[in-house]
Image (cartoon, rainbow, N blue to C red; front, side, top):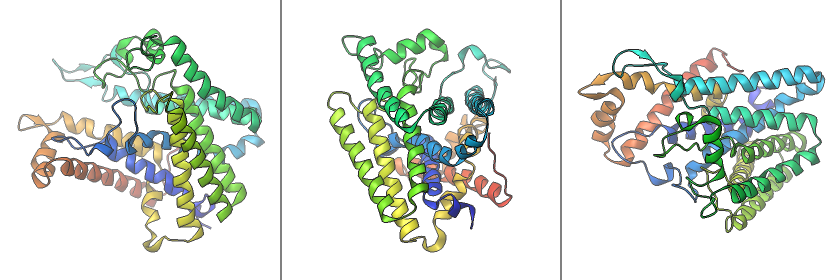
Length: 375
């Protein structure tokens, strides 16, 4: 039995699809605005792009449902050592990725100051969510984990309402999360892509994000225990629809918001992930609709998720240092080729897909050589 089959093809395809879409939405071509579904919601609201990162956390939980089996045979000291070591490594990789390329050519060649390096981020959130979810799942009963997960969502809502700006506690500048991040890190270590110092992967909003990993873990466990049948698909689908319904109800008083990672956002994203996963099980495991082995495209990408994600984030940085015709090489490629061939958002999308395929090629080479990089 091959590795994909033993791990359930649907779970591996889900992880690969998530990574492919993440690269596409994270790397749009310049020269034109992307199609609106490929952009995050400005604040309250939801777009397909908003599903990408929570799906990655859900996939982390899926993977944990396999890897944590070994923890039962280990002593608590060994388990804690493994969890904390992995957490530290992923967090450090994320931090170094934001510091990369470690030097600046602005006003001469010099080391980039650590004083202006972002501390939190995508990998840092993954590290922290993995850490807390692993500790909860290993040391607590299933019922206790469920209760804690529900409390995280409710407590986060209460904290935002009580400690945010009374005039608008869910605004970008007045939410409790930005107050905490400024207190802990200062403005220089926050994300500035919103035009102000505000980190969408801040400390406080990591609390509800833990639930995305927890749901992914128990979805993976459920599939392993119940198998690839109609009963499994139906229960995952119904649970996903229930989560979406609850999210839409909660949205009326606690809006769905990716940048705040609101509790309603957790429910709608985990609900959609469960629906997508049930569709993949029905397609791949029950009906075997894999003509031409199309699923292999995604499983190839999903076998090395961490290195391929890091590659996708840093590959264009050294290229952008090269100046061609008075502009950086990345913008020049977009203007000279993609926007010339297909002006507007289509050219932007073609660049993103092309870049994703370059990353896929690296994943394919690693897979062919049986190189799988884990931390």
